[in-house]
Length: 95
Image (cartoon, rainbow, N blue to C red):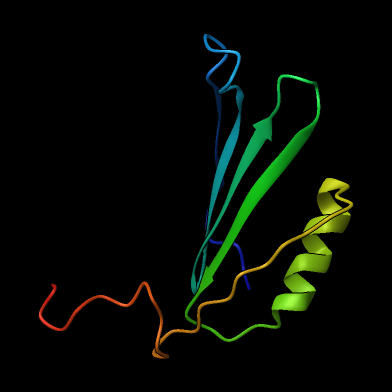
């Protein structure tokens, strides 16, 4: 995956104690990476990371890189493969 251009990074939501955090969008040559920080009221934090790519990649490597980069300890992963049956697949004629 190769970065395409600069990332879009915004910090917002500090007017509401339930919503502060950072959102990052990074275009890549095959699609995009999205990151959203989740800050909890007890001071702990987490993140949702979406790796969307038309090019095949090893999801376990993506999880490992994410944990290493952001200092995570626990990860949960969902994988949707383009073209395979999915509960999120649009109905024919949807577009």
